[in-house]
Image 1 (tube, rainbow, N blue to C red):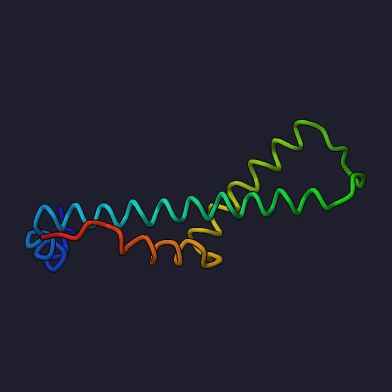
Image 2 (image 1 turned 30 degrees about the horizontal axis):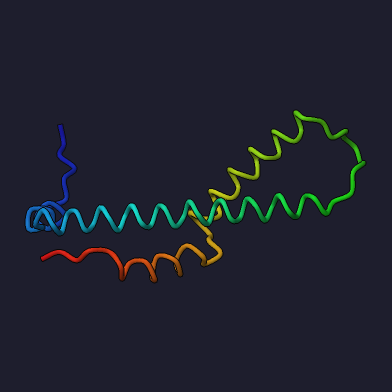
Length: 104
């Protein structure tokens, strides 16, 4: 069986103190929270934009279509916040990162 360990990452992980490790976890959690907030914001933008489209067209609008569109918008918003981003999550992260407790 072939080993796939990266020696540099193992060395870096072993040199981190528990406080630094907690600090890294805090940064990751903050980044994820900022991305989640951006996804919710983008989803609300989609919802507001959909309200401007007049009813009618090829398909009737019913509860099933509304639920599907909400789920579709949610997934698209998640992908936008993780891959493309509109910049809101990054700005929030930069401001809130300063408030994270520093390691000693």
